[in-house]
Length: 92
Image (cartoon, rainbow, N blue to C red; front, top):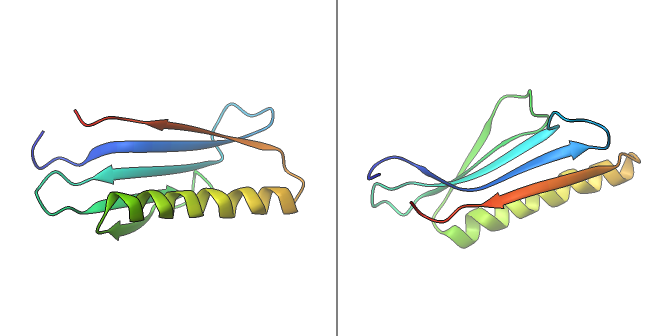
């Protein structure tokens, strides 16, 4: 739909044995012709949403990957087993 942001990628972090995500990362594309991409993340999932804007899909997906890597490193340092589940969506 024109004007409405479209979800392009979502990642949920699950700690071993949990069914509720511990962290959430979303990548959205603005559909208003601006070319803006937004990364939204909550770590932990109950924390307020942090939002960053990017000028390209590549930059937005790189930021999402950087956030995932940072959280994964933290889990490893604290001997916390975890798994990311990431889904990518095509434009609709």
